[in-house]
Length: 384
Image 1 (cartoon, one colour):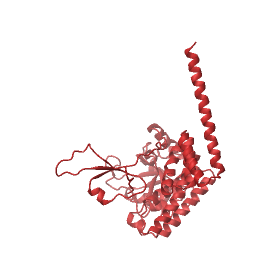
Image 2: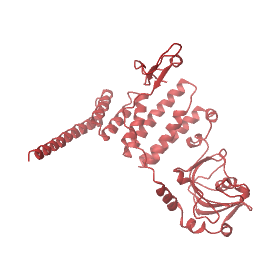
Image 3: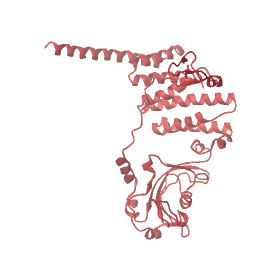
Image 4: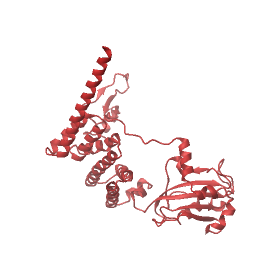
């Protein structure tokens, strides 16, 4: 772990008596390494202060809004049909397992089929016979269910039905007790010998070897994947994000960049050459993610990947430029100017940087004029 040399100081707050260790505080910063010797000597580690404001948080809906989301999500067929006795629904359904699993398609799709070794994201509502309110609903947990079909434990009947579906499909799935939770049920929630009705919508299907698929693997399983395959898939995800960005689908682009970054940051490599290759790709992903946040009008969120890119490469022109734009849009004109001036040390003839500096000067003058008008009005009010 990097340590900023010269920032260690003695802690007077920690009493030192005979036989006790004395402590030093060390602040993290780019440049050096934290040594085992430091830990043995009783170093207390502080993270480096982050000068940037916290990134913008997504606004989560209230509980009432989440319940309304579930209500809106349910189709007309769901609202009408799920209150009907389950046995009366069976004639209109396709039998997937005799006396065990039935399915009725609410929305068909030609999307990617669910396969045994893929990862899927799906939303669902789950009902007991005669109930109008679901006993479980993925949207109330604020994110879809994510499972790897050959790894994640599922109710057997649900697994059978999911294997018959495609990306974009929506269906009703009725499961008998022998393919559900059997005689025992689930304490306090599902009685024994209960039939279960699931309303399922498949959002995404990720074939084996996809970044989203890797997220569900153990560390040991990930380390068995060849580095070249990891990089090929990461570049593919980056290209997919670039395509979304080009077509103005910035939220989808952000998701692609963020997931790839999240995985690569955790991935452990064996050789310095592989680590260098990974860092070079991360630089590009950081700047692409920053660009996406700026398009989404989230300058503070853009500062996070900008800072990471500049930490990896202090002369990354694109990262410095985007950092300056993020500071400018967050009305931090002085720091924005500093980043644009750093850009000019790399490319003195950059017209786009010069244009940004002109914008800063213009906003500075506008701010001065507004201040003058405010003081003038205050003065006039005092001498009336």
